[in-house]
Length: 125
Image (spheres, rainbow, N blue to C red):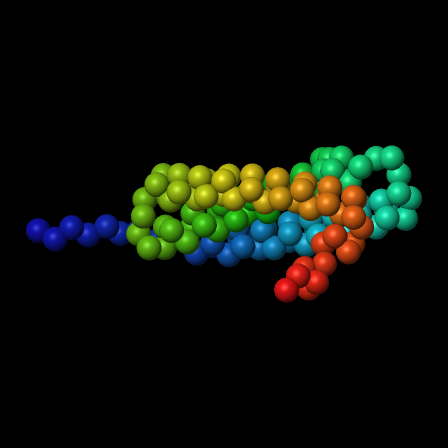
C-alpha cells in the first residue's frame, strides 16, 4: 500500500511573508535614513548607536517576521512538516537578525567617529 500525503504547500504565506519583509524593509530604510540625516544636521550629543530605538526596531522586527514566514513556507513547499519548517526558519532568522543588528550598530558607531568617508568601501583596494 503506497503512502500518500495530501498536502497543499502554503503558497499564500510564502508571498505574504515576502511582502511583509519587503514592506518592512522599505520602512526600515526610510526610518534609518531619516535618523542619520537628522543626526548629520544636528550633530547632537545623542550618538548614532542610540538611534536604534523602537522606531527602528519595529520595522526590523517586521522584516524578521516576514522573512521567517517566507523561509518556513519555502521549506514547506519541499514537503517538510510545518513544525520542522518553522524550527529551521526561526533558528536561521534569529541567528541572522542578531548578526545584522550588531553589524548595524558597529557601522553606525564607525559613521559617527569617521563620517561618511569611514564607510566608503570603494576606497579599499
